[in-house]
Length: 155
Image (cartoon, rainbow, N blue to C red; front, side, top):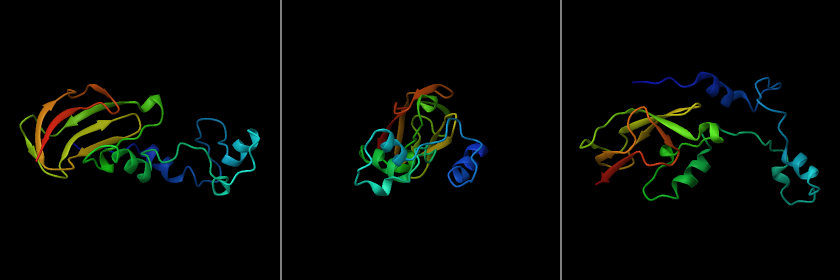
């Protein structure tokens, strides 16, 4: 089953930070770091390269740097298997589709299952060869982000 990307979010992610007039902002105008430091009375800082940055959501799917850092917290994990969410609204993911059943063997790169949040649908690929031993979160049930959804035996 192919699930289409959420087109509005993809468009926003591409143009939101470069447009002249952002009519889609969901809150007040974002502050720059300089404005925040000025409000805090800390304008004498060595972080001048950060001053023009806006405090926005950033990349909806999480930057590659962040996803790599999170993956690095685990043994044998890849950035592609990390789903970043912004706040509580994305904190639950729906195990939308499973593509392997207990006892099935898989190889590196095979899609094991798909998770879905309000913002993104994400195929989770195997990072090594192995066998699916057990499904911990049944199809169409919510799982908390970070909660194990299956047990695998890696070869």
